[in-house]
Length: 137
Image 1 (cartoon, rainbow, N blue to C red):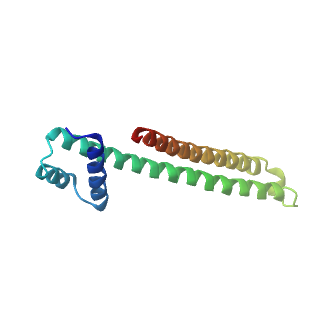
Image 2 (tube, rainbow, N blue to C red):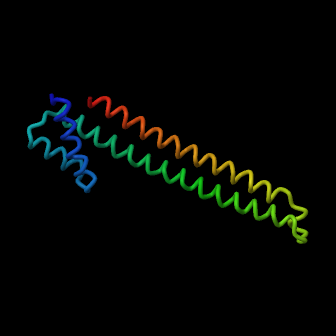
């Protein structure tokens, strides 16, 4: 059984190799050559896989928040433009209430939802950092 620091160093080393494109079978083979027991190999590979999956979920979450904010700004701008066009002499804009106010409302909602999602992601990162920092002390 490995100590905590040696295990974490090994995980970090092979995590970088996995990010470079090395396959799990190759990682297992190298660990067996380095005389690790099967329990430690399983722990290392599982931890590497968990970190890789967590990174993928965080990338998706970041993209979603950015898309929500962008869509929110766009719909809010369209709503404001349509509201300003209501004061023109174009009959379509004067008679239509749903398009300007609806797009404004949906835009503001998406904008706030995107900011909340981004804030939660930042808070999660801060909490993870604090948790890891406290564990290492």
